[in-house]
Amino acid sequence: MNFGNLGPLELFIILVIVLVLFGARRVPEIGASLGKGIREFKRSINDVQRQVTDPEEERRAERLPAGEPAARTPAQDEPVREPKRLI
Image (tube, rainbow, N blue to C red; front, side, top):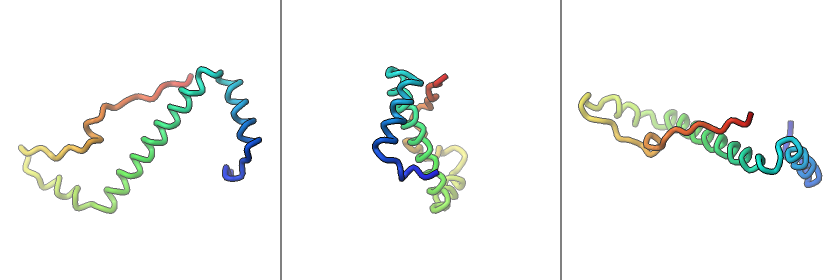
């Protein structure tokens, strides 16, 4: 399926269908949930890519003495949030 060929009329029709199905109040919630999901997916892809391209950093963390904590990354400090359920 190629989404690059959608014109303004098709996008408008899709928007009207979404409004009818979910209502005007739920559309911003759905958009926010989709945005968060996409950001989390990109973050995961970047983490995997970083592990593949820079395995030396992982090896350094394995060589730390048992009493010394590993350096914390900002992603570890963030609380884990559950996505809102749409249904």
